[in-house]
Length: 437
Ligand code: HEM
Ligand code: HEM
Ligand code: SF4
Ligand code: SF4
Image 1 (cartoon, protein in one colour):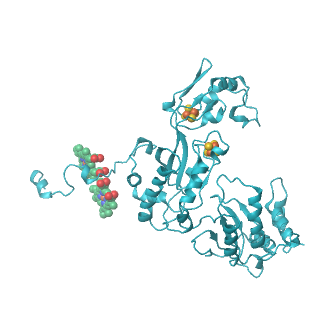
Image 2 (spheres, helix red, strand yellow; image 1 turned 180 degrees about the vertical axis):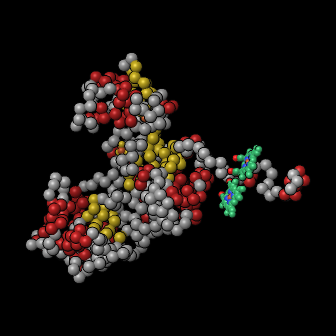
């Protein structure tokens, strides 16, 4: 018998999509029965009470979590999101309901052994509820009490050999696409770079030292499966510099209908026979592909690496062999001054262990932003306030036409004093000698 009546939530148990309500009820039941004899460290009814408080929020259309919450573990300045219910008498099981961010492996490949290990910790010391995964990438343990935080941290680090993720004004948990592990498009080892940078900057991740949050994300090609240029202040996107490799026989197989375009991604609907002219050549944003006399040619000098042709004919077209990445900066959500996608800073950089070149760019940006960034000002906003040119200066990057989508149209141009003949300091009397008032 459920502790609280949940008529509104019950409606979300119907329909084909996996129901979070059904899952929560199941977990509530598992805890109530406790067939494994777990020595529960937080209220057994935590899940029941979570359903109860959520039903209340459904009824009155308001959240029932109090403002904020500052909890954590010694040594770190972040990693745990404290939270308290504003109806603790009605729902004592969620009076404390803190979230613990746990560092995930890059690409999110797991063994069941590891997952069982961390879930055993969480079943005993938390609610048993999780988010797999948070948007930034972390494994998210949803709901525990303050006294359990150090216990959980001890067991995660000593038994499961896993650390906390980031929160607060610091480097947050980095994430990557699954890269070379199972994608033919990967231009660099996104997982390798992600892991290396995460380990390199542990201090910046665990102890907030920044004006505001800062995120890394690593996409191994411009398809951007981890969405780096929209969701990270420092976005690394794989790219190649030489020619797209063409297998003419495979092109013929696409044209002949043996290979399905886009690896069969549109097979749910009849789009007619594959037409290489309209589906590939005409869609190339640079119009740099031609198909004539049964031969596909690409004018690579004009290719912008949009991935369209490769995505459409993955068995015939392959990324080039001279590979690296572009670095883009400044993506952020709307608050305060409007949303931003990252802007291209380094058009091409080699990405090879120990990744010194990439790390140099990050550290130069941090040196600048940590001094000049205002309180709670994202890198993207600092760039807008102080100018892209400043970012180029501090990263020792030479200005390049690729840094802009288009040149400025307003003439409010700043010159440095030493770029202009004669000093800024002028004597008006000298001028008056030639020009009467
Ligand atoms: C034959 C008459 C005029 C000529 C040839 C002339 C020419 C110019 C030129 C070449 C500029 C510089 C534009 C630039 O660098 O973008 C300018 C700016 C300006 N002129 Fe004139 N002008 C004339 C009459 C006037 C008059 C009668 C006024 C005011 C009543 C005036 C007010 C201004 C102002 C305020 C600016 C600065 C605009 C800005 O910086 O955006 N001008 N003018
Ligand atoms: C109380 C009266 C006025 C006030 C408060 C005022 C205020 C301003 C302000 C705030 C600006 C912008 C300055 C900038 O962006 O750097 C401006 C620009 C300008 N004003 Fe006025 N203004 C007044 C009267 C006038 C009059 C009477 C004229 C012309 C006869 C005039 C012509 C201009 C022009 C041409 C500009 C553009 C100057 C430039 O872009 O360099 N203003 N004014
Ligand atoms: S971003 Fe590119 S390389 Fe990475 S998984 Fe997606 S398609 Fe593959
Ligand atoms: S990657 Fe894009 S720009 Fe380059 S040739 Fe293919 S379709 Fe054209």
